Length: 114
Image (tube, rainbow, N blue to C red; front, side, top):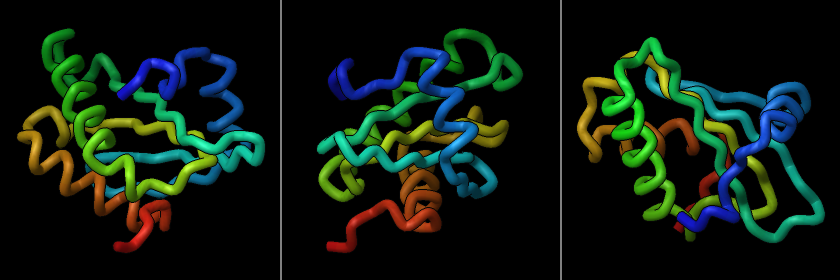
C-alpha cells in the first residue's frame, strides 16, 4: 500500500473517531468517514501495546496492510478508514486476519460485491 494512502496525523485520526461511524467484530474495530473531495481511500492502523511487543505489533500491521492491498479493488473509494486491532489478532495467521477483515468490512458495507 502506498504511503500516500495511509493516515498518519493524530488530527486526522481524531476527526475520524469523532465524526465517523464504527463497526466491529471480535478481532477488529473499523471507523469509516466519507470524504467527498477524495477519489481514493486512506487507511489508518492502530495496534495497542497490549497486543504484544514491537515485533508482534508490526507483524499485525503488515498482515492488515497486505490484506487491504489484496482487497483494494473491492473497498469503496472516497472514505477514510481507521482499523483498530483487538487482542485475538495477535495469535492469528495472515489468512485468518484477511478473512476477519473481509467479514468486518462486509458488516460495515464498505466492500463492493463482485
